[in-house]
Amino acid sequence: MTELSERAGVPIPTIRYYIREGLLPPGNLTSPNQATYGDAHVHRLTLIRALVEVGEMPIAAVGRLFDHLQEKDADEYVTLGLTQYALVRASASESALDDQEAAEVQDLLDRLGWLVNDHHPARATLAAAVRTLRRLGQTDVLGLLEQYAAAAHDLAESEVGVVLDRDGLDSRAEAVVSIGVLGDAALAALRRLAEEDVMTRALKKPSSGPETTN
Amino acid sequence: MTELSERAGVPIPTIRYYIREGLLPPGNLTSPNQATYGDAHVHRLTLIRALVEVGEMPIAAVGRLFDHLQEKDADEYVTLGLTQYALVRASASESALDDQEAAEVQDLLDRLGWLVNDHHPARATLAAAVRTLRRLGQTDVLGLLEQYAAAAHDLAESEVGVVLDRDGLDSRAEAVVSIGVLGDAALAALRRLAEEDVMTRALKKPSSGPETTN
Image 1 (tube, rainbow over the protein chains, first blue to last red):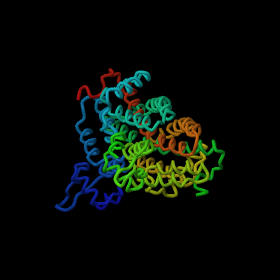
Image 2 (cartoon, chains in turn yellow, red):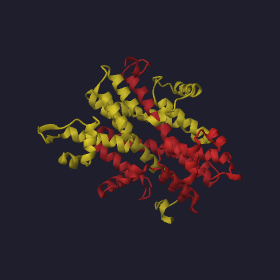
Image 3 (cartoon, rainbow over the protein chains, first blue to last red):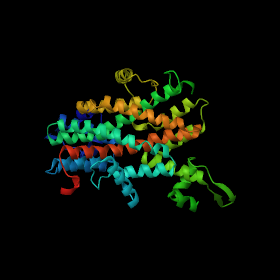
Image 4 (cartoon, helix red, strand yellow):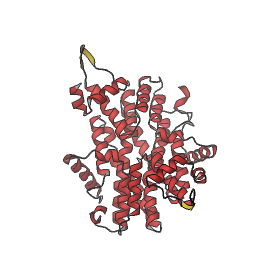
């Protein structure tokens, strides 16, 4: 376990906790107090850390995701879809949509021509963001939504291509998880960096950046 | 305060906590145990809830953001830039980049031709996502980064347009916050919905969605 801890960069008590919670399978016992861990353990630990640290998922949500990946549905489409649902942030989807909000999201999806399950949890996330922007009076920011939708769909074409180019359902499901957690984190970072570039050019500042005078 | 609580949909103990932490200014005292709260209080409370619930920012980070917005730099470019930096998730930016990662992020920015401050915290967020994708062996997902960058820059052109079309630094700073928190949440939701649409068409499923057989 010491070696596993070093290879994955995760402290031993944390590893024990993940094993207790069922997120990580126990090692193969070679003696009463010696177990071996392989590359699959390092990989699983890295994935758990990505979900917890980058995706900010609670341990219970990570457990539900792994349980779900274990009990795969015979239908690949169902498994990949439910994997994706498990990544939608619980906090946002807890706040249920009211009827008017649900109708508004459906109107947007109809205008876009998108086929989306009625129970997709991202409907509530989207409604919550729209509700808050409206309460804050940010109508100009709301005006960006259609452009966000177009960009999201262009990216989705490539993303689903990556998923379906893989062999095997486990590998495809891991692509869905990687795109939903690490892809989102990378995109958010690139958005902040791109916004600074555009702001820098718009205000005709040199490349020294905003911290130079503060 | 009862009325404020009802209008903003936030419980009174939570409001008291925000006042104690300096996130929300106290009401105007009209008698020793009566204070009045106006629209500005409702607006500020809605903003705090958006940062905490949608942006998942810790209270201390919200406090730092508001302190920063209060002590505005004379240079608008600096104020808007630092507002944006305050939104980059603390957890991801805590993990510092090593020299090789910093060089790799700079190479990407050079290829893209983007002008970005050396100290932009999103450099570390991006490096952390890339590092994890590499450890997990997701090279095909890494291959999406350039497309993410192009989409991020297109969106940034419109976003900076929204910010600079506004009058006044406070309003512009609030646009930066709304785009960075609520815009990101809306985009993430739209990405999941678009992915389902593309997946549904690719696997030639009807619009009933993945939950029908589970």
